[in-house]
Amino acid sequence: MKQIFFIVIIAVVLSGCESKDDGIEIIPDYDAVYFTDQDVDSPAKPMLEEDSQKELENVFKEFYDEKLGRAQLFKVAFRIYINENGVIDKLKILDESSYKFGTTGEDGILFFDNQKLYPRIKEMLSKYEFEPAKKGKDNVKYRKDIAYACSILPGGKVKGYIPLDFSLDFSSLNPDNFFVVVDQTPEPIGGMEAIMKNVKYPEIAKRAGIQGKVYIKAYINEEGNVVRTEVIKSADKILDSAAANAVIKTKFNPGKQKGESVKTQVVVPIVFKLK
Image (cartoon, rainbow, N blue to C red; front, side, top):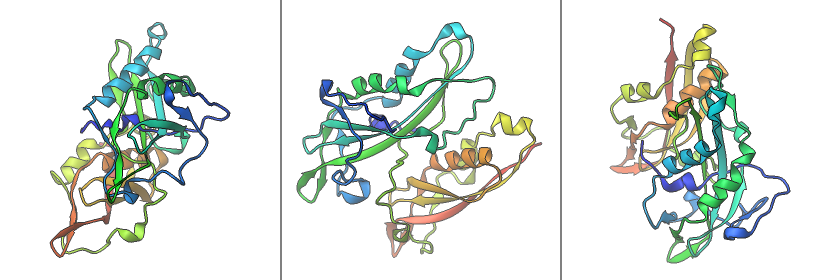
């Protein structure tokens, strides 16, 4: 999976908490003045390549208690705000319970109190610098989301659940801008097998005998990245989450209209069937 710097960028709701050391301020709402990917000509880019996922997982490991002898689940979701100089100056914590992280705490996983993570994540983010986002020739304020969850198993093995290049910020995403019918329909690179490789049948669903077909609507941009998903037909909430995560992780050949790549929406069926 492509490692995107935007581990650096995530969201959650910290109430009544402000801090200005390290130059990053935790704020209630600045969305009106910071642009999203859909609003800019060029998004903010990291000055240096970072293995962001690995770095975030190392932060989680700092909080893992080996003495418990059980897997522990960590998950974060937050939004970073990058100013015209390419510096993160604000951080908003989003409510991760609103997003699907592809796990239900099966196999005796303990859930970590994620609020304890954010001061450490804030410290981690303070070192990142970016090429500013641009709208035309002007540098502009920019915001981006990231969500990530992983369980750490006894012995330090990490199992991740969410890709870091998946945006949770849909405030300026207009479904009307995504074609339904195009000359060339987007296709997953590697075919449906590529999607099925990403499907993880939740153990809790297996044990409960839950199966069925989930229909996921995928919004695919000009680069072939899935930028948003919707459950069109549900089989079970547990299966819905697993299906959405599988589609999100899949890279597509973008749809084309008159020879040019365009934003497209397609519906992908995911079947969960017990043997």
